Image (cartoon, rainbow, N blue to C red):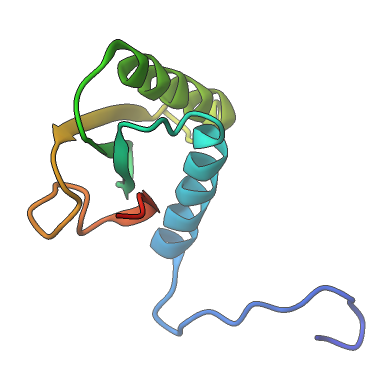
Length: 118
């Protein structure tokens, strides 16, 4: 803590820059947007944050109308939270797979915000 501030100071990796700040911002928005929308068919959610595109990778045990609606609502909520924050706009899309969240999953290499307990 600093002497003139009661808030903790976050010390970032020396290589951290705008990309890490952007990824952290996207992850926080994705977590907020997913609250209450992770149903029993969801195995995992990961977020891929690019400069002008955010992709939600969602792994399901099976596709269902409820899961599709929940994912659509999550994207809508994320877009509402992010509106106006990126000059020129932001594209948000999803990649939905049926299967496990192991290394073969499209979201495995990205920032995972939810993984179901086995």
